[in-house]
Amino acid sequence: MMQKWNRKKAHFPLLAIFVLVFIVFTIIHNERSIQQIHENPDHVHNKQEASITYVEPNLPNNLKEASEILDRFSRCNSTRGYSGRKIAWADPTTPEYGHQRVSSEICDLFSGKWVFDNSSHPLYNESDCPYMSDQLACHKHGRSNLGYQYWRWQPHNCNMKRWNVTQMWEKLKGKRLMFVGDSLNRGQWISMVCLLQSVIPSDKRSMSPNAPLTIFKAEEYNATVEFLWAPLLVESNSDDPVNHRLDDRIIRPVKLLWSAEENGTCEELDGVGAMELAMGTWANWVASEIDPFKKRVFFVTMSPTHLWSREWEPGSEGNCYGEKTPINVEGYWGSGSDLHTMHMVEKVLSRLNSKISVINITQLSEYRKDGHPSIFRKFWETLSPEQLSNPSSYSDCIHWCLPGVPDVWNELLFNLL
Ligand SMILES: *[C@@H]1O[C@H](CO)[C@@H](O)[C@H](O)[C@H]1NC(C)=O
Ligand SMILES: *[C@@H]1O[C@H](CO)[C@@H](O)[C@H](O)[C@H]1NC(C)=O
Ligand SMILES: *[C@@H]1O[C@H](CO)[C@@H](O)[C@H](O)[C@H]1NC(C)=O
Ligand SMILES: *[C@@H]1O[C@H](CO)[C@@H](O)[C@H](O)[C@H]1NC(C)=O
Ligand SMILES: *[C@@H]1O[C@H](CO)[C@@H](O)[C@H](O)[C@H]1NC(C)=O
Ligand SMILES: *[C@@H]1O[C@H](CO)[C@@H](O)[C@H](O)[C@H]1NC(C)=O
Ligand SMILES: *[C@@H]1O[C@H](CO)[C@@H](O)[C@H](O)[C@H]1NC(C)=O
Image (cartoon, rainbow, N blue to C red; front, top):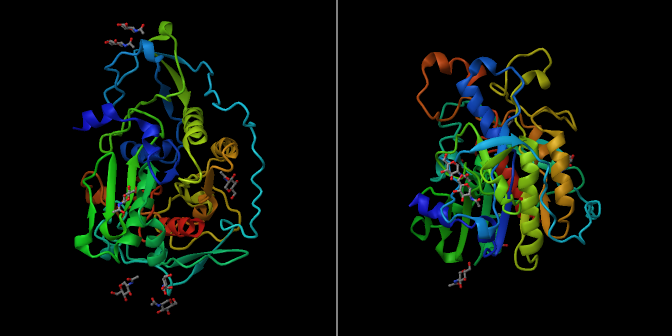
């Protein structure tokens, strides 16, 4: 069944039928660093090695063999260095740099500060949401300090519209809201479902089984809130929603073609290079397929990590474990936000100016060192007490507890709709 679905998967063009699209993208190596922490606890303090991604040959249609499926069993026949080929921009009239995205609005929603406000937040209770994920339910898994739930985002020059679930459903009526991306985007999708589900009677809502495409449906509004697992944004060997923890990533950006002589040889790229190819493919798709009057596309920027406490507290040796409050240094950046990657992303996005809206969550989430599950989550395998007493090796400082930071990303979306 899964195989069949994969075979038929038409990646980006598939999205074209949606009334409302929500594209999200975070960084390729995020998942990987958790894996590294688990498999290699001794090296947690070392700078993470650059991950290698392979780009698979993508032959012109007339040369393609019908059975060519890219899945987790795919291997490269041989590899070589990156040839440097780039995604050709479909519409050459689009300038490489669009108009500088100077926001004409009076207020920049993404520049602001966190305010402790236990009267307005959390927007829902962890135990009241039947769709909560065990990876994100921090209270259930033993976190006793619940401070992370009580913060409101306050932009400097204006107020955000308060979250109103009725109004959100009115906006979603007859539409599909789709989140696309990796596990961080799945967290935001779960947050949205938790925010929305409370006002729908249980016999009037449904959730499809976990699959590459998972669908939450509310009958009375004829609306769905969906999540498409596409961690690398383009066809890849990590597209299986369960078995995607692979040593070697292989991507196949649709617009990049190899010739017949190059048959079978993958090219080797670092994470940022591979992401640039994936982003280029995605941007071309948006530029050519999206009619802004029919569909809206949002791009959520990178979600930062908090792997080394020495970055916000010099001299300390921990990670996000035990953190109780946000960082209150305006403009703080840690190594969890890769500025090189952010610059590349901004460059690609600037060409799509009128077609997409950016939800720039990087800086505001960067302040929230207190918002990650650390050890308070379900682990893939049962950990021994010795392992659990070693938070420096077993903390998840990448994903976010719910209720928490992703709820605020969704409040921003609500404000931009
Ligand atoms: C690629 O190589 C395989 C075997 O190595 C061969 O069967 C196939 O025909 C080749 N495809 C093209 C397009 O040359
Ligand atoms: C909110 O926080 C204040 C200050 O910490 C505390 O006195 C109050 O009891 C809290 N209220 C609720 C509803 O948690
Ligand atoms: C969460 O639960 C508490 C106690 O049961 C209740 O007072 C509060 O109103 C609930 N909050 C939300 C947002 O439902
Ligand atoms: C939410 O919006 C609805 C419809 O616009 C309005 O009737 C209701 O009072 C709002 N609720 C809150 C809590 O503001
Ligand atoms: C429900 O929404 C879909 C689009 O998502 C539309 O095609 C269909 O006609 C709608 N059905 C009703 C009963 O409104
Ligand atoms: C790669 O190698 C496998 C067997 O080693 C072969 O079946 C396949 O056709 C090769 N693919 C290409 C594209 O050469
Ligand atoms: C997001 O905001 C940061 C500043 O907070 C900026 O450096 C970055 O370029 C922005 N990203 C995009 C895609 O606009």
